[in-house]
Image (cartoon, rainbow, N blue to C red; front, side):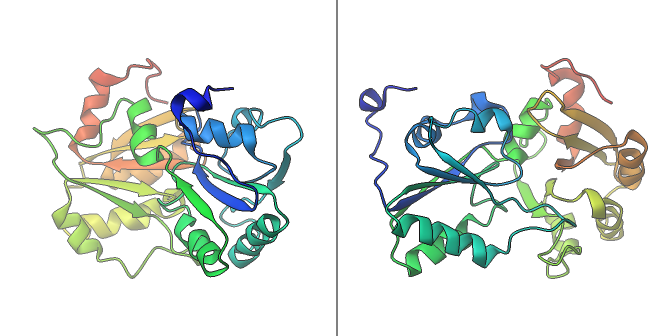
Length: 263
């Protein structure tokens, strides 16, 4: 698949686990290490956001195990997933834990790595392109711009129980970050927008909701903060989504390099 010797890629040892980011969807965004792992793994434990085209790159004979989590649907428990990774590694397999985006950006990669460390199972973390950067780039929205925004805040749109994260200081986020990027926020977008507006954000601030970023099904809905949730509902936007709030959204009108427009 790739010239691992020329790239001096590390050995994927038996009895170890690689926690690998698959990126936001487009297989072209995979890293060389991710491709190397797909070409070597004996067992691939993958999540719900891994594109099917990426799974097709697995070596012949690799066992694929689904371990995805989707809000509101029956899902494997995190302790069970971690235990499965440990068990497979102890059987002497090369275990690839494949996650959408980056494993350590709202991907529970840190939890799984801690479980592996506690069990003394060798592991490697392979970063991936997170949707909050790569997905917005495919929508023609740079997360920073030196004349518009020199800081960005990445926020999860729901807590572990599926509610709006109450432990976050929404007022401080509203005041302190010119650009806010929300993950997994579609169901709570109206509530979050209300909190940000109450803390001083302009109701007319531009917002982009990007659905299924970097895939052929990518859709982008551009609205304003006070109407973002309603606009997403009217357009029938489907998860997974990434939401950008801030003036960089206006750059999409010029930087929509895919030429997909809004819809």
